Length: 518
Image (cartoon, rainbow, N blue to C red; front, top):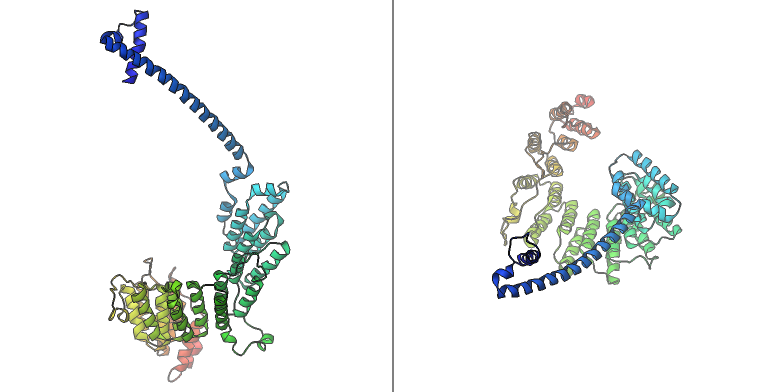
């Protein structure tokens, strides 16, 4: 309507001044009312012109801001650092390589580029940022290129800081090579020489490579010297207590005389000492603290102490409801002692009281306790429940809460081999042979629905349960014939032939001829 009114006004002016337009103005048709409408139309036209001027001013200011932001963006895009990030980052180029030698060559090339950049820290930061330095060190450690990682870390062009050194300590501490694993703590001395203050995360990373209670205590004492940068919190104590659960490095003959008489219990005693020290410093333990304590007790067979920690944990308001890691740790303790009755009681309590469905670690720990206790029949029943997804009788019997939603974890190769070990300890060759045949028939499916195939441990375990040399020879022939299969070949090992020879020696009478053949 507004647009039509303004058009009528313009048409009226053209009609009065020229005869080219035959359309009469809106006001001439409508009389006096049309005159009033013409006035209103003129007023609305003037208001629109005023608003149009304001809009044009706003649009002009908007265009000026847009040009200014565009100029800044263009200036930012011209910088080498942003231009390199648009094309391809350094981390993505390294992440596409798995070969250690190739990664070392790429690190050398990167160091040359950093050296050739004008020599200032600003020029080097344009090529690679400090955050990317830490990410690159972490990536090299994950790929196993430890030499290249240390070379890049120690080069001045990488501008090392506490974050990059912490990433290097964590990578070395988690290495399976003892030579590199021992270098994690030595990086702390390099940080001192360079004036880099370690943090709490640095010490927790180093603790991953510490084995035994004695070394854990030394590292804790060293951490206390850095009062300004290291906070002795619950994470520090948890990492030290967990280090006590790992076996210390083997002692040489010269050091054996210095070992204490209770050297086997050194780990759990140090863990208990650290736990008491936490309470003195008013540090509240969490679930990870108790889980680490349980691991330390399990390695030394301290079942009563582990159960007392579990009861103490239940009375603590902050850890009243243990998680699946804590339940798994206590089940591991009972498995190492072969106390299957308490293990079954703990699993029942975990399911009924906490409502936690047993995972594969829980089930394997219970199977291990049954195997140590020579309860092959109960282990076979538990394996069937895992296959069918049903709740065992010792859990569902007289249950006060519904157990319909509880599902047992599906077995893996460790579960089946543990059941085979239980049958072997009980000389139950028949059931062990049936399980092996079911594995060959692909009846056991894992979580990913992939059939579980027997390995050398499966065959070696069955060999130890063979009743006569003929059965041992049959198992060996199956292993030899498996070489024809491309993806299921199982090569006999030294343990395989040792078990077969042992069967021949224990036969009545001993079959020495077949033993020599083996």
